[in-house]
Amino acid sequence: MFVANNFVLAVAQLVDFLLTVYMWVIIARAVISWVSADPYNPIVRFIYEATEPVLSRIRRILPVSVGGVDFSPFIAIMAIYFLQSFLVPTLRHMAM
Image (cartoon, rainbow, N blue to C red):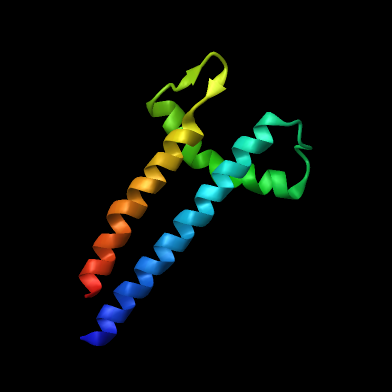
C-alpha cells in the first residue's frame, strides 16, 4: 500500500512542478507580447505554441479583451493557482 501512496505523492509533486513551469511560460508570453520580440526566434515560437491552445480556448469561452488588453493569461494563471490550491493538496491528502 505504501507504494501506491508514494506513487500518488510523486504524481502530486510532478503536477505541482508542471503547473508552476507552465505558469512561468504564460508569464513569459505576456512579457513578450509587451515588447517587439522576433517572432522567428525559436524560444518565442515555442512559448507561443505552448500557450496558444490554452489561451485560445479561454478567449473563445470568455471574450476577455478590454481596450486592446488581453486578460486571458491572467485567467489562465488564476486557473493554475486554483489547481495548485485544490488538486495538488487533494492528491497529497490521498497519499497519506
